[in-house]
Amino acid sequence: MKHYHQLPSGHRMYYEIRGNTDSKHPPFVFLNGLSQSTQAWLGVIQKDFGEEFTCILIDLIFQGESDSADQFKTFEEHAEDLHDLLSKLAYPTYHLAGISYGGAVAQRFIVDYPEKISQAYLISTFAAKNEYFNAIGLGWKKALLCGNYELMFDIMLPFVLGKSFFENPIISLETLKISKQHMSPATSDLLKLMEATEKSENYLMKLSHCKVPCIIIHGEEDILCTPEMGMEMAQHIPKNELIILPKVGHTLNLEAIDPLKNILALKAKAFENISGI
Image (cartoon, rainbow, N blue to C red; front, side, top):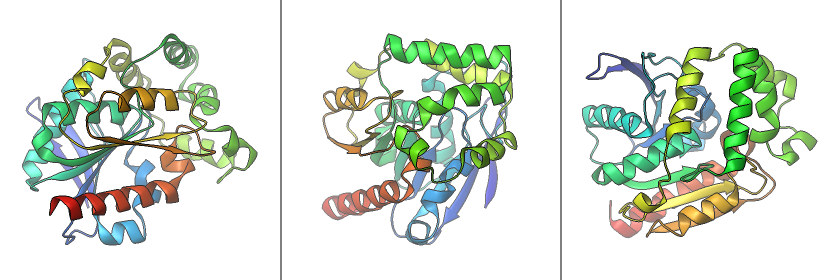
């Protein structure tokens, strides 16, 4: 079902509730990558996963069907918006999965609102940037400003899809480009999302105070949020497990649908058994 939640700011945040709404498991909350929308998770939550878990898909402000705002939002402010929504939904606790940009928001959420989350899944994300990461982001931004999202998307592809995808694509690159053209984010919204990344500070020390168990998942071929970034996060988060998936890149909710949903389901149920949820 499709819903809009009105935030204290007056802006509306879009979300969907899918899957098994009568599930006895804590719901899964999914946060998107930079230019993604809720549709990015449909492959992960369909069939067996959706039959077992309640799935809450969220467009952060500036994404998908959510509102825009005059000023960019920090990752902390996105987390505050998410807290406002999840408090309204009033489930006792949630599993939180965020990829890339959404994973950065998820990090702030589990530090600031640990009581809301049973276990977090930090997917293809970063806590600290390096100059290579910054250079990639600058290239994307200049492509967007010089052209449009279509040009930026072409520049993004080799950074967000693994080498193995190009050698043996799950879907053709042309089909992928066409699907993206139909849901191109507005340039102004993308610039504000990019600004949040540009102005974010090293979050590793904050993660050292995290009380939430975390599963950190990276693709072996990810050259944007590298496996080394995942290892660095694992060195700081007290309760963690690091999983590196072979022969996939950054966009794991496209490149590694079955392995990803299997990890989410198995780790969630294992945690629930141990904790007695």
